[in-house]
Length: 321
Image (cartoon, rainbow, N blue to C red; front, side, top):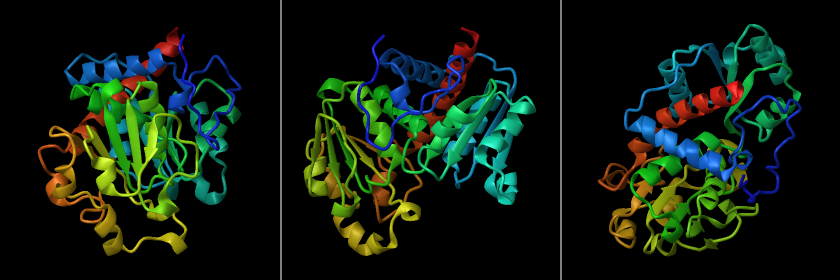
């Protein structure tokens, strides 16, 4: 079985203390065959394939704000027939000092079979997987600036649905790369799928301070990044994770790094435009591009429900195998 070999410092996986239990924590945990299978299943679901019913309960534990990810996981679980419990930080026992492990152990003891966790600390979900006892399965819904594997899966499926030729494709990823879990997991995923070239661009203090792997070019302007690109992924400025000393002034950032129609004209004629959301319109991407014919932003949202449905099915299949 082929396995991914691309690993970034600071995002090392934590050894699972219960090898009989399968989680969805990182793109790096997947074999290439498993990754491709998840993408194929996501696309089949997007075409209307019937789902495989899931018996049991799913708890969404979101300790950071979220609309797209939380709602799509909820809709995916409901589509499979699972009971869904939504827990947010303000209404959880974490406000009383309870640890993440104890909160999840309590839910597992109540019979919750799958825990979908978003947490502000990088590596928190992997650590939880090592510490948590019992049979509950974990899904990483985003941890700090570390991992966001389900976003990478839906982005890859969205691009593949357009017929992107991975080995010959050039993908530009632009914006706040250093603090982006979307960029980290995306690079892992795109490398595994054999992307031809990735160009990274953004303000100097927002460029990656972590290893980005092979077939990657760092360029110094948005114009250089988008030139003849087959796909462009714009990133949100991660205000909540940025040292205030490097917080960009919106108008200055927009002048240099906002994707506009003049930039898109430099790309391949059928270049796809992505953004994981939420969008800071006029700062990261202008509305005419975000809402234009080449934009896949709402298609990413739609694909997110199918990708998360595929993840739940995969966990169930692994549990039964």
